[in-house]
Image 1 (cartoon, rainbow, N blue to C red):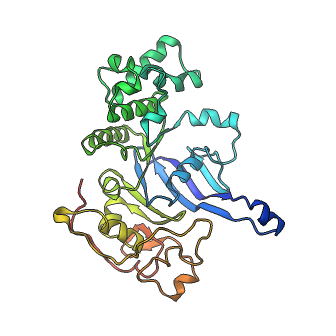
Image 2 (image 1 turned 135 degrees about the vertical axis):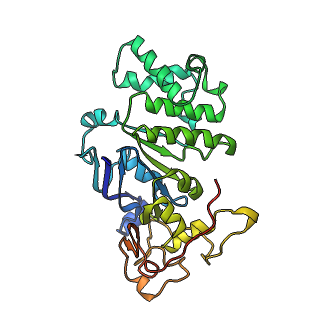
Amino acid sequence: MTTLLDVDGLATHFPLPRGPVGALRRAPRRVVRAVDGVSFTVGAGELVALVGESGSGKTTTAQSVLRVVDPSTGTVRFRGQDITALGRRALKPVRRHMQVVYQDPYESLDPRFRIGRSVAEPLVVHRVGTRAGRRELVLAALERAGLTPAETFAGRYPHELSGGQRQRAAIAAALVLGPDLLIADEPVSMLDVSVRAGVLGVLDELRRDGLGILMITHDLSTAAHHADRIAVMYLGRVVEEGPAAEVVRNPSHPYTRALVAAVPRAGGTRRDVGIPAGDAPDPADVPGGCRFHPRCPIAIDACTRTDPALLAVAGAAAHRAACPITRNQETTCHQPLPR
């Protein structure tokens, strides 16, 4: 499999203002460690899911990969080229091959423009084709995204489409340049359940056509059924990653076990793994040692001092977890996650 995206040690930190009192006292400036040493790869024709609760750093990771936000440290390589420090002019041709679909399709589409014009806008920005040629590319992108007949949808305004149709139009705008990598940030979280399957089906078809997809989601069941690999993020770090079926059926990190246990099952049953209630700690005040230890039901004294690295889980070289306590344990979830 050809590696499209290679992220190594990515960190994105945001300094907080000290304020007048803090400046007078010369207090040290606090830093929000939104992304704090993340590494993963995405191959051609592969769908990788970044999973985690709100505030875990998933979207900031995607923004850093796209260079919408400049990372603090680490490297981002796209098709073998290091794009971490590229300037605006050098980055523009690279961005033509890296496109994004956002969570809210209505905010992605200008309400003043017809769908055809919104889909054609990336072609205009990158000066691709003639006016007549752009029209053909727009109609082809709409057809590929599942909006048929394309001529009809190209002439409509965003408010004349349903939520699922708007998201398909946003996908078409991302596809019109023929990218190699698509980053989908919660692409179905705002859609009705009956519409999600159609949009996810479009992503599946694109993946089979060779497009690499990085999907950000908090829905583990969606990731389990559509992703090739899953990377679980917690407080700016990847705490477990591996093949989707292996991560879901044999979760190793306590946080991943909690996510699996929280998925509703037939009959309303759920597995209780004893995770305390409450939110993740403040990313500007990350706990020492393992950052999950304040909420972990099996934490020991060593967890407060050592920040564990991602190492292979026993019996599965491609499955890695950042918990030395559970890496050699097998906790198989025999009941499949709901679709």
